[in-house]
Amino acid sequence: MIRTKSMFVFPGLLVSALFSGSVQAEQPNVLLIAIDDLNNWVGCLGGHPQAHSPNIDRLAKRGTLFTNAHCQAPICNPSRASIMYGMRPSTSGVYMNSPKPWTVKSLESHVTLPRHFAASGYKTYTAGKIYHGSGIPPGDFDEVGPRPGQRQKIDERLIPETRDGAKGLWDFGGQSYEEELFQDYVDASWAIDVISMRSEQPFFVALGFYRPHVPFYSPTRVFNEISADTIKLPEVKDGDRDDLPGIATKLTNAPAAPAHSWFVESGRWKEAVQSYLACVRWTDEQVGRVLDALASSPHADNTIVVLYSDHGFFLGEKERWAKQSLWEQATRVPFIISVPGIDQGKPCKRPVELLSIYPTLIELCGLPPREGLEGVSLKPMLANPTAAWPNVALTTFGKNNHAVRSETHRYIRYSNGSEELYDLRNDPNEWSNLADDESLSTLKLELAEFFPETNAEPARGVGSKRNKAKKKSR
Image 1 (tube, helix red, strand yellow):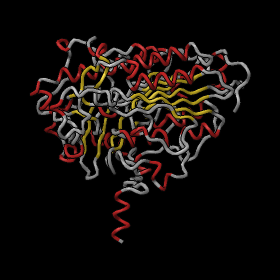
Image 2: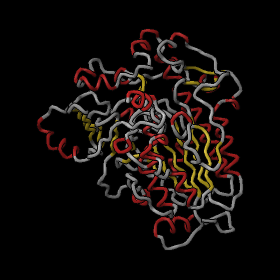
Image 3: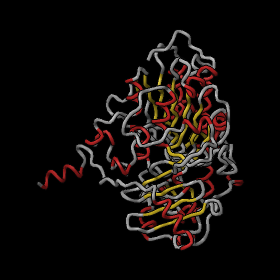
Image 4: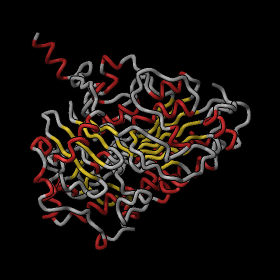
């Protein structure tokens, strides 16, 4: 669809069109902001007392902050694929960081989120990390900006003793080169140029920030804003893992991450937490630059902003460093949707999924619905954050390993039938596994109804090593 000549919309007009369907208004733009490995350590979620994120917080104040939002997979590739393809990992078979979803034959005909917008008259842009590894399906976007990797050639290794077994990514601290050369600054600058342009077409911009993904690099200026001596460490309970089934320990063993004991014994725990918090501050600054540019652009009153993280992250909780698990700290993410004219700033406590981004955006923008989308539109929650919501959030990590998150509980069931159950009201750290409590058997049955019936075999990409080996053996 082509916009009308006017570049400005009275906010009430747009809101009326979106929520009542009674008024024809120009089609809204979309700014999608993805942040890598950002857990609940942002001010508006209160996950850490030293979290500082004024720009993310101000977006939350003029939109809907989903305080109980969860990813579909606690690892980059399947999480990002589920968002862009609108399909659960248990349906697509994309469970881990390979294969690339666009190399999976069964997904070849599936229309991704940006392609659906492009087919509806939008000009689509992307920069940074939207898909895993900054890869992009062929033809997925009209224009592609810079996509620097997780490490740059000018980054200086700071903690050499973490190198072994960590693929060079487990490093942290302040980097001293010019801030304008940091990858997230570069990506934000490109997006700002796009947003600032006048256009006869509505735009769909997908901007992906790398930090706070490892290595935890921020400018030295930002790193020094936080005193290591004052750092508050996450709570860790001795013996916390004693009531876990064996498969949980095996599945959550992230081989690339240093052991928690290394951080404790080396005395680097506070420094690593300081580095992560600094990365959050740095990314928040880039979010602020983009939001400021949007506010001063011709599109200020006609752009929907969605901000989310692909999954959470552990920094010592449960004695681990990584994301790959079905526990709260790995699945819960910041998630904000801001629609022009709805300055409610009211949080929504209902359990929601990132899988809802695709159907929500096409409904808000008046695009044709698509078959095969497995998420539920969040439009009712935007109009009324306390509206009835019969849904839960489902996270999958590997075939037939699932976690269901309701408003009050988390129920995990693994492929071998092992279970975990936590009451998040009384046990937010998930220290007490209640799965063996017979008085809660009915609750488990109710939550188990939300486990997917389909558990696809792990997908194989065209040209993958596994496929090549299979062909060779014939």
